[in-house]
Image (cartoon, rainbow, N blue to C red; front, side, top):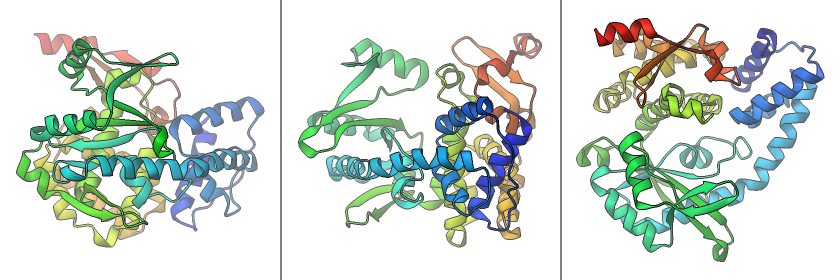
Length: 364
């Protein structure tokens, strides 16, 4: 993507949170617009762009593109909310053993309707209680399943073992909930590395608009977990191969959460949770890039809080930002461009080169 177009998109996004950010219009060719539309869809930022573009700044062609996608998101909103409530109802007897995370938290409590769409429900599970959660989901008719082409099939026992052993990946749970007028419901499970006591400390109960109760992480832990999700997606080689590493919408949601709840955040608690969850590198990287992307929309106290957090984490290995490790093949890759250039590329894999020199040094 051309630098001029990239900076235009970033200016639009920054103006979503700060009205004084200027967004001069630019000319975009038909071919360039195809690339822009593909980028917007892949990174799921149409809701934020549409919200900002409605103010009258920016490119009119991008506004029309985002408007169509935004309307699709609005139509799907009620189904997403019903799916979240359905999963919470299934797990109502296990409120101290799991938390709704990522989109399942952002959509009810951070995003505005139409900002984004999601196809699955994300839950973080206490590792000591995963077996109970698994049994409860199976009892409610969910089956660990795999999509092959247009077919959904049950995963085999060996597939489940291999997925977890190789990548710590729990194969998603699936159920078609036609009787509840929801349709397909997918649940993605992430198993927490916290001990049981700490896991429970970081949970809180919140009410949806209809007073349905759900379990989620507290605000400070949500900030840390968002950083973990972004870092994992961008720095895990298998996500890059599967083209599941387009994460600009996660940065937007993290930014929205920090801005909406800034006066409520205890940055001391954020730092404590980072260290408890051993996510210093993930948070250092994510917050540093967040400042680079959306720094022009911050007021001084917001920028200071984020900069102070990265300073206190005392991460020495600053070269981690452009490195990706393939755990399966034991190879390390680097990319020789800025984080902005990397994030705005549609083909991350093409930007990687194997760092054989660094690997040889490790082997020696």
